[in-house]
Length: 87
Image 1 (tube, helix red, strand yellow):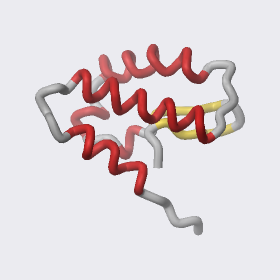
Image 2 (image 1 turned 90 degrees about the vertical axis):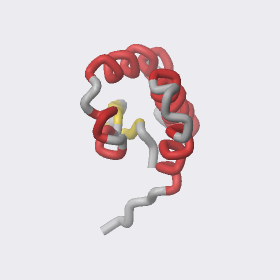
Image 3 (image 1 turned 180 degrees about the vertical axis):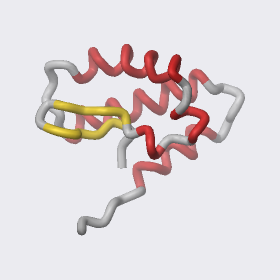
């Protein structure tokens, strides 16, 4: 699982439902993430490598914003091991 996911052809969005609630409600953080991710994604191929870079950028920004939570990076990094079963 990534925090940046394809939602359609050429379209990505932040996968907020997998973030802790206090992050998902932070409008300033969302704006900061949008601003930082746009240059990484606009005009780029939305392949796994690009999405992995975007995912890591999301984690970096969140951890930079919330330095007071030392284990937050470990918590967020664990999301990459979550898989969804195809139905």
